[in-house]
Amino acid sequence: MKNQQWDEAITACRSALQVTPVNARIHAYLGMCYFRKAEYELASESFRRATCLDPKMWEAGAKLAQCYDRMHRREEAFSVAKQWLCVNPSDRSLQALVQALGEQVQGNRLDGWERTRHLAHKVQFAQDEE
Image (cartoon, rainbow, N blue to C red):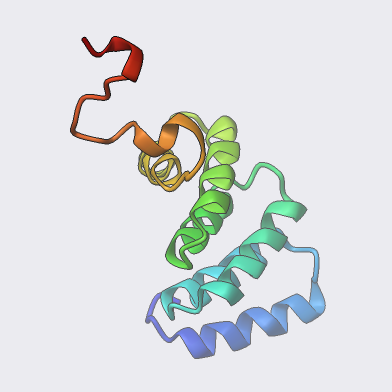
């Protein structure tokens, strides 16, 4: 991984997981290798396993949220980022991710008042007209 030889690192991680399949850190390393190769679906699977095995591994949780974001699964990314921000509320990357995704997710809503909250014009109801 230090030499950015992602395929070799993936092979090494997979070999290590054959010996210790419940090692959360190795799953996270595997996820990072896939993430660096822009294989976000495979990366998300590895990060999800890492976070299931170690519920305090917020770094893998943050990367999982980033994977969902890069796959344009914004609502999932927002939900995951909020969850992991509760584990580590001081992490600036999670804070920024929650803020940015929150605006995107709310902006995509098609029902209710959220649909019109960004309109630049003034809304006037018929009963308010003279």
